[in-house]
Image (cartoon, rainbow, N blue to C red; front, side, top):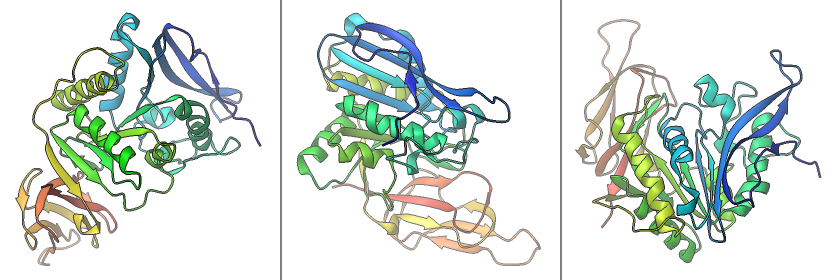
Length: 330
């Protein structure tokens, strides 16, 4: 079996605060004997649970890096019981380039797990998480948003799992994160996802979608910061009770929740994020742009619910996700 070439400049069993890097050797046109330097922070005091907190799994999603860089600066080891591992930019090459995927190899970090120690750069990072970091963790929080091509209502999410006890732990952590919306999700295709890798190990796992459009807002950054602090309190790593308020429970039970473009053109939304919609309601029109006079393609809701996600750029192509409709729970 090949050995992963990534080395860590931090010691995971050492008490205190450490700021360092995961160093992945690479050879590129710009640096023949270069390296990808992935920032990492470890805060530890004594025995206790471990939380693994990650951002920029996709490089154009920024709430995670903001919240985790802030936490790495501010977390007092004297307040910690256990260990916090912070990786603000999991896919560092993609993050540095402002792209969803890595410019080194086109790798989508959230589709290559369990990775390969002798694979591409992205696969090597995934393998390191799979073999070195996830085994250390009790609780895993992976902070996502919509990136440049999607926009979401700000929600934390847990997945429907075969193990009822594990699902209950994930749901409790999702509720503790306390985003304005909380979603029970069933992934359309979970193969290769970081989520799937963590859940297969029995970890308590929470993910999010906190906005989008390739930027942040004051509100979405604040949700991320409060959410990670809440999960650390929920896990007993920080003292105190999570600061929670109202969070509307939603589900995404199946493919009827997703509207996919079949035509290219100019997008006109007929409902805004958060709007209540009924099955059959017109959600999106896609106008032809090559000439005037043609009727737009009309896309309608297949289920009752809330418009929870939408395509962000003004133009679309066949295969783009145009809308996500979440169903209120209960």
